[in-house]
Amino acid sequence: MANLNKASSKSIKMTLDAELYNTRPIPLDNVKIFFKDTLPQLGFGKSNEKEIVLDVGCGPGGSTYHLVLPLFRCLEKLFAIDMLPNMIEMARKHNSHHKIEYRVANIEDWSTVKEWEDQVTKVVSIYCFHWLKDIGKGFYNVHRLLKTDGEAAICFVLHSIFYDTILKMEKNPKWKQFFKGVNSYIPHDQFKICSSPYYIGMLEEIGFEILYCKEEVKYETFSSDEEYKNFFASISTVKSHIPVDKRGEFKNELFDEMLKLEGRDKNGLPLHRGRFLELVIKKK
Image (cartoon, rainbow, N blue to C red; front, top):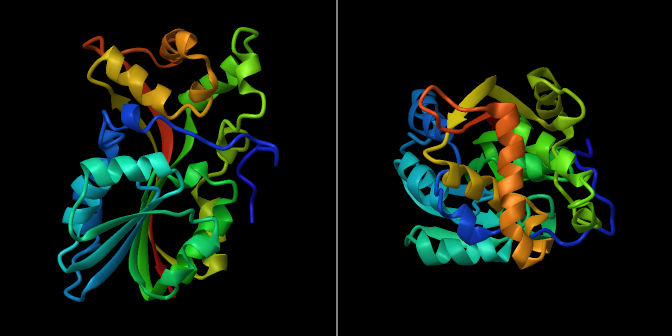
C-alpha cells in the first residue's frame, strides 16, 4: 500500500474549521457535474433494489444531503462518516434527514467501519481520499465493505495549487513555527506525478473492475474573494494552531499567494486550478 502522506508518528491530531467549511456546502462545482450528470448517465444509483450507501468523508454533510441523498432511487439507509467529530456534529445540526445516519469513523481504521462488512451496495466519496495516509488501505477497506457487484463512486484531488502554497508558507519564517508537528496532509501526488493508470493498477489488484475513470485539470471560479479565502482557510490543518490574533493575517496571505499562481477569470473572480480523478468501480 502506498503511503500518501509525509506525516510523522508524532503529528498533532488533525483539526479543520467545520463552520467555515460549511459556508460552501458543496465544495467545488465540478462535484455537481459528477453527481448530477456523469453518475446518472452511468446508471449509478438507479437500481430498483434497496440500497445501503456509505458516504466516506462526509464533512459537515452539505454534499451528503444535497448530492448523495437525491442520487438513489431506492435508498434504505445512508451512513455518512468522517474522522472529525466537529464535522459530524455540524452535519447532524445542519444536514439531518431520517435516512441519513452520521457517524465518526475513519475508512483507514477497519475497527470503526467493520460492522458494515459485505453489507454496503454503494460507496461514495467526495474529495476525501487525498487526505488518507494510505490510500491503498482506504480502497481495500471499501472493497471489504461492499457486497459482491457493489459499486463505488470516488473523486479526489491529485494536485492543487493550494498544496503548493501551503508548502511555500511552511518555509516562511513568519509561519514556520506553527507548522511544527502539524500534518499538512499534502497528497502523495503533489510530489510524485501519478496518473490514472497507477490507480487503475492498484484498484484491479485489490479486486475492482473499473467502470469509469477520468483524470482532468479543472478550473473552479469562486463567487468572491471572501468565499475563496474562507474555503481554503477551512481546509488548512495548520490554521487552528495559529494564534487567534494572527489567523486573519494567515488567511489573507494564503489567499494572496494562491492568487499569484491562479489568477482571476475575465470577470475578476478568483480561480482555482487542480488535477482531479473521478472513478466508478465495481467489486468483482
